[in-house]
Length: 211
Image (cartoon, rainbow, N blue to C red; front, side, top):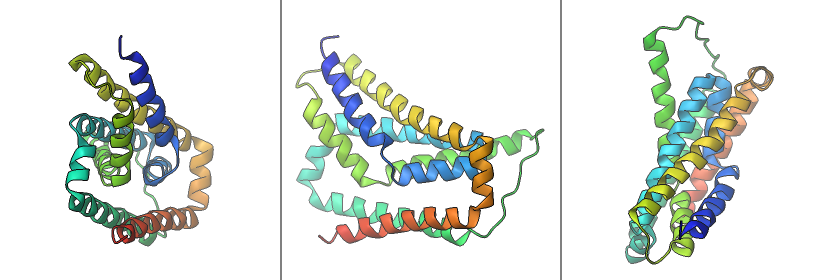
């Protein structure tokens, strides 16, 4: 592929950002440890879809749009910050609540309960405007001036695989027996720490909109 170096550059740059801890990591890790591996993987799938969506928008010129309409970026920061703060508050206030278990012979209705985890993963990913800026900046730096539809499709698929793949690893590791048992033992404090991080990130994001 003629534009293979550009594709590899985009993948490498965004993969480095993906594996760095942030709100998405906190959400997937807690979901996997507190609910089930299936819930964690559903959240990881949501992260992948969100990454693919950011890739599509970046290909369509997100950076130019945000530069042309600064108020749009401010609105994204405020809305995203408020959402992260809300999620953090929900985690904090539910820290003392016990976790129910799903029986091995779960019904189809119970299995469909993983859909909310997918929505949480997707909404957490899309609510972070900093992720949008990272995508826009990386694409502006690496995207060839002329590229084919096949290249664009390869980028979108690659971003889905990077995001979903990394968070699937996180979900599998933290839903295994030892990490899950450790989480259950210290649930109150782990949830308060996770909720506090999410709440602080949300408040910081909203506050930065006034800078």
